Structures are given as structure tokens and as C-alpha cells.
Image (cartoon, rainbow, N blue to C red; front, side, top):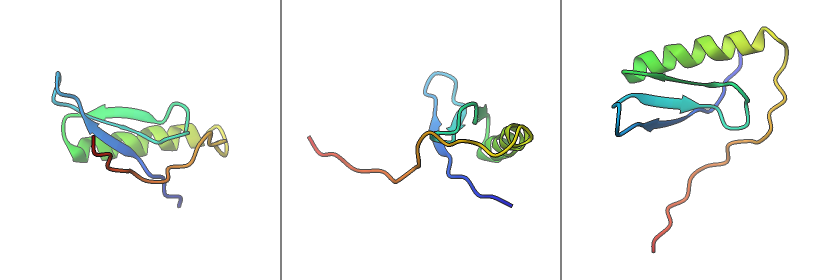
Length: 68
């Protein structure tokens, strides 16, 4: 079993949650709820892993708060 870090955002226009794995091409999806998003992310990542070990382009490091 592998673990991937997903970035989750909420679209203001649709109200849907959007998730993607940084640096993992194709590992992105959406869902009406966080549970649906989690399930969809698991499904798309599993599908992508069927093609073999992914070559991640970047690695998620964290977030920063920037005051202006």
C-alpha cells in the first residue's frame, strides 16, 4: 500500500471539491463531498498505478502563509 499527498481545493463556481496529487500526471479528480473526492482519488490513482510505478515530477513539501 502506498500513500500520496493530495491537494484539495473547493471550486467557488460549482461547489465541488477538486483534488490532485502534485507531480503525478493525471492524478486529479473532483467530487461533491470530501468522501466522494477521496473515493475518486483512490480510483484514479489505482488506475494510473496499473501502468507501472509513477515517475513523479515534483514532491509536495507544504504550504506557506504570505502576508502582504
